[in-house]
Length: 221
Image (cartoon, rainbow, N blue to C red; front, top):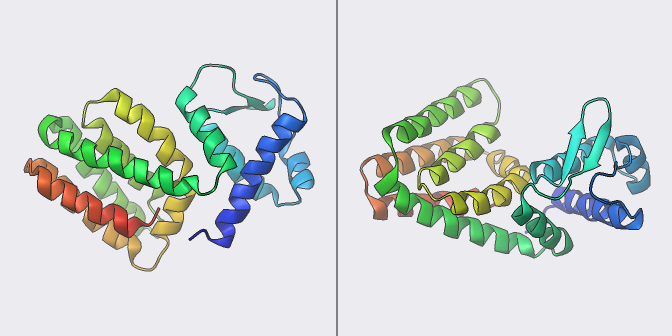
């Protein structure tokens, strides 16, 4: 179910897409300032900033210090551009994005059981420890959680899978923060990451898949 906050966020992204077409902006062109966008969309500047950040993560816009925000030129993540256009126009696509992410990660964890190097296993452990430290300091380990899943997909040694996975999850970081903000969820997520890590270390594919499925179901992305 889409929360009111998510609806506002998605509406801002839709309106930004509309402004780009309405103003006939092309790759390389400068977007209106945060202040102007906030006034045109009648929302807070912080909301506009968050939406722009999502587009920047998808490599669709570029922020240049002291100059402003520009539409990214051709190149970059072409897949991300296609996904963003699809996602911005159809909110029901969120379910499709979640399912696609699960398909990729489940296969990735199978392959990781066979292909992960000692260095990659060590990286997964370090990220779990960093998540615990961030949480102990009173902060939600959103970035550490994202990096754990990224490292997991990297461990399968399939670059195409990683390139498909990255824009799917970078776009859903807002949903990730909401998920981890639920009471008790951060602690559970860290324990679930540990179970996934241990299964990969023991090269137990079935167990690793089972732990990952459990984790993704509980995450509610």
